[in-house]
Structures are given as C-alpha cells and as structure tokens.
Amino acid sequence: MTGPVSESADDRRLEWVFAHELARQARIARRAVGEIDQVVRDAQIDGIPRLPDFERFWVAVQTFLGSAAMMSKILWATTRQKGITPEMEARRGRLRRRLNVVDSSPVNDKQLRNDFEHFDERLEQWWVEDDRHNIIDESWIPSSSRSPAFHTTSYMRLYDQETGVVSVFDHEVNIGELYRAVIEIGDRAQTLADSRPEEWAPEP
Image (cartoon, rainbow, N blue to C red; front, side):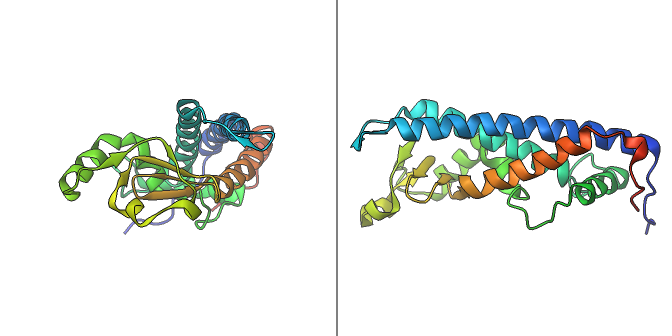
C-alpha cells in the first residue's frame, strides 16, 4: 500500500497545462456542435424537410465526441490504464477537484473513448456476433418512426433527431446533455488556465 501522493509546484504547473487543453477541447466541441446544429437546421427549411448533408453531420459528431473523449481521458486517468502511475492518477484527481467535476458527469463515459478509437474492433465484434450481417451507416431515424424491422438491422452511426441521441453501434450519447457538461468544464478550465498556479490553494 502506498500513501497519498503530495502535490508539488510542478504538479500544479502541469495541471495548469491540462486546464489549457481542457478549455481548448471545449472550444473545439462548441464549434462542432454549432456545425451539427446548422446541418439539422438546413434539413428543415420553411417547414419543408430536406435531405441532410449526412457526411458533414457525422464529421461534426465525430469531432465533438473526440473532444469529449479527450477531456474524459485527461480528467479520469487511473492506474488501471497502461502507463498511468499513482502520481498521475492523483494529479488528475486534484484537477477534477479544482474544477469541481464529479464522477457522475456525462463526460466520464469510458465508451466515448472507444467509439472511434477502437472502431475497427467494434466492427469485428459486430461481424462475429450478428449472424444477419445487415448494417446501415450514417442514418437519421426518429424514434417515433422506427418499425419492428428497425430492430433486425445494426447501425454503425445513427441519429434520432427527436431526442438528440446519437448512437455508435450500441453506445448512445445525448448530444445536448454531453455538450452542456463539456462547456461547463471548459469554462471552469479556462478560468483556471487564466490564473497563476503558484497562487492556487494546495490540494491534498
């Protein structure tokens, strides 16, 4: 058993660098969600449905989820991960406390990290587990329009425009909920990044 890892001035300096990166990723997420919203608006002009720009939409979704995943990796590194030492884990815990980020945050979703980073593995898994091998990609299907046949098909990327939920294989993310959490953390991180680490109160 090892005791608690005390914080040094160098630790605070690195946490300050991480705060800068968290704020940057939140800015990227904001741009991506702006793009998502624009595609959704363009698909409904003057009350007339139009064919969405699917590729533009999913590029923005991937960018958004990638930024959220990066924030998750920064904030919740643990010794269960390869290469993460107790010192690193303790430092990320102090960073979360400084930013008042709780473990129940939507950003603390380990699957976010896997949606695209391990996309190839998910595709291999689907091929082994789904005997039908019937798959559709980059779809918009509102939950109210899903027939029984919907459940006989697998979806790589799926968007429900009624609920704002995107799915990558079987992992669902509510864009609005995740976005609010990302921006909240990003704003706090920017405040921390704008301060001087040598003036921070020590964290245990």
